[in-house]
Amino acid sequence: MIQQLTRTPDLCGSTGNLATHLVSSATKFTEKQALVFSGGATTYGELLERTNTVALQLEALGIGKGDRVALLFPNHPEFVSCFFAVVGIGGVVVPVNPLLRAEEIEHILCDSGAKALILHGSCLAEAQTAINGTSSLSHLIVASALPGNLNGVLPSRVNLHHLTEERRCGLDVVPKADSDAEDLALIVYTSGTTGKPKGALLTHGNIASVMPLPLLSDCNADHNDRWLAMLPLCHIYGLGVIVYSTIALGATVAILEKFDPALALSTIEKEKITLVPAVPSMYQFMLMEMAAKPYDLSSVRICFSGAAALSTDLLEQVGRAFGAPVVEGYALSETSCGATINPLHSRKAGTVGKALNGLDIAIYDECGSILPIGPEHVGEIAIKGPNIMRGYHNQPEATADVLRDGWFFTGDLGFCDHDGYISIVGRKKELIIRGGQNIYPREVEDVIARMTGVREVAVIGIPDSYMGERVKAIVVPIPGRGGDVNEEAVKDFCSRHLAPYKVPRLVEFRDESLPRNSTGKVLKRLLS
Image (tube, rainbow, N blue to C red):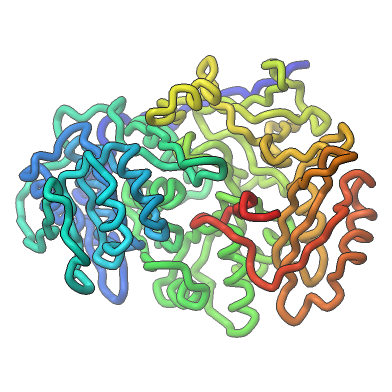
């Protein structure tokens, strides 16, 4: 029987501008810590005051509803105030990863049509080169002291400003009265695993429809929680969970400028962190640090994991080490950081959980029909609901390819079980076809990851003149513990757990970590 997941009631009902949630929290928790950073703290009252001050400065520069404003920051409290200031006056935030090079920044600025770029002084060098190739940019706004003089001269059309350090009380700038849930709030650029990154168009309503209540209600998250922000805030995971949801809840967020396992663990200990959102690779590095030095992690209630596959073995290790349950979720930029979550009290290992409240999920075959439930019916995962992006900016063909009849086709392959839990077996575009047989890389990766001495693994397909493709595994051993991990051992282990055609024919070993983007996803396009 064809099975489609039934939509559960929408618990959010959020409408209007995202900045209303900051105003609400600042009204209720004026003197409470909102952000903790580098030894200092910002209260909710101060955060709203700072947001209004930034908003007023932007309006004085002629920036208003619909204007694109790029934010280029490492993790920093000013990113949060700038985010709410821009969306609060009706502008559109274009978050930019601070690890990007000039050519990549230039693409985002040009494609989005950014009118202004607000950046941290440490990001100036690459940005200045990128600005020379843009045509829409009118304002460069520096949010901190410059590390030195500008290298060269900005184009005459670009005006240089410094974000005001004034504190103006009693302002009532955000949110604008004419803001609407259907207005564009974000253009989030995908990680670009194929070709140039594409900008996903997300509205205020898209984000509010899945954040924060449907994601967090089962975990009883509220204003008493203390979150750790080590995820990049420029990414939808960091934006949705840290920048928006925690502020909407009135919780406290401890921000790390960048991920460092020792600093992360010491911050958890010092700040009594209760909720830890991360990606699997972060947990792996923290486990290695914990093996060398003990930390008091007794305050942690829940560890969240997303953005990349979390093996059952790693899930169990993290749960034991942190003394807290690990909740895995699944989402994409195009779904506003919301799709599924493994319910806290009914988690099912090996799956990414059930659809979030208010969403439909179905599994489609290549002919466009919904597949029955069961592991034997693997197809493309499609999602439908108020969280789905409008489309890709300036990409009508790419939009039409993934948005069909209200469904967003994710490009991820998986199946649904009888209880409504989704299992992901790989990416449609990463599918390996060997002699007519389909092989899902994640299935092979999960097996090899169970071997003692393996730290990281990625499986790819390489061309073969006889079979079409061969399976290749790239393995990174754990330093000092990988002596027994060799090509013969990998093949033998896989032979014991996989059908013969799935066993890697080639195994490559590397001493360095696999290339990853800022959210921990392995960049397989860089492997061969």
